[in-house]
Image 1: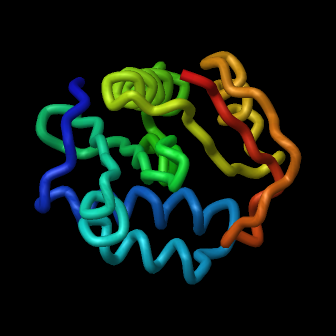
Image 2 (image 1 turned 90 degrees about the vertical axis):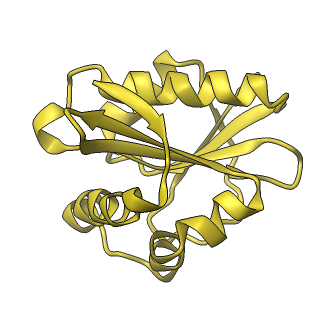
Length: 150
């Protein structure tokens, strides 16, 4: 398994992987659709990054880093195919974000999540994220805000 930088041919897999997990636990929101329908314009063209986890050429996970006004990056749209959850792939994707953030000189990584996603919260805490007070958000499902200084 390898983690690679997003290429245009990954756009459909990025959208489908994210639609699957969001729809399973929540409702796709307007902001989800906006980002998933145009990852190039909404993430990459604005200085962000997207990484894809590939297994024998098949996309099985992804994560985005959305550039923030303070020079930090929001970690977003992170998911792993259900058949590979618990395999450590989520940790590898997050480590790639941490490494990339440091290489870019970012002061921090930030994320928004939901308190019902216990495995994700455990991963974020294990990777050095700490909870913040609530912030403005475009997502109705968000009730946990976290950051990791770099």
